[in-house]
Image 1 (cartoon, one colour):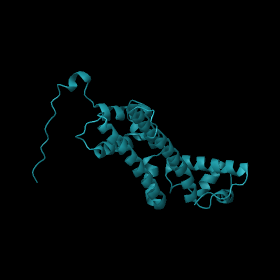
Image 2 (cartoon, rainbow, N blue to C red):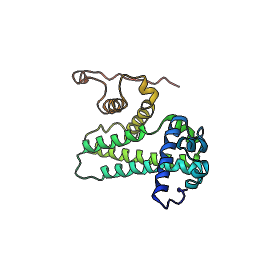
Image 3 (tube, rainbow, N blue to C red):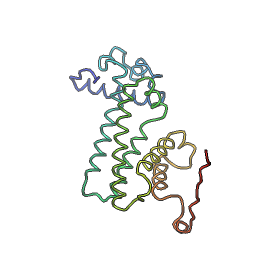
Image 4 (cartoon, rainbow, N blue to C red):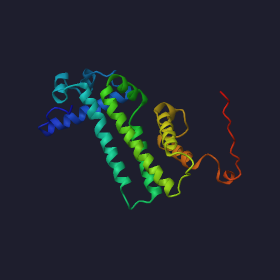
Length: 215
């Protein structure tokens, strides 16, 4: 459900402050652990004032999540449809948009929304699947243009990239690594698309054969 009527500039400004305060609290503590009273208290307003602008806490959650998702989708579509961009530049910008989107969420927040706001989570998941589909289409284009190997399915690359980003681009993971969040993302992209072998050793490297044990 959308926020309640915002007929004046003051009301609109208050809605924006509520959303920003809720975003900070949700990302730090999780959706279910933050009450409407705590959001109101953080802003120095009454719960009555809060509910005059948003009918439920889930409405606040939607206002926190979906404008950002729509924004990233528009940016992604704009890049993918830009005929003036070379394929490498297009890939670079798409990965940057996806990386920025990932930085906005935490595992605590995602898990909590999935359990306590399943309707919202379903919409988030659908958006994520749509984004991955677009990424997969771009990879297929890269295969056709000869940028990527054709013997590795694009779906495998998409899932490897997603798993790496989701597991490593978290405050805890970054805190354990000797680099910034932006450097972690760049390293993921570099390893995924260039590998870990040095330029001089790449050709001399013998790919190990892997034999799965018989069942």
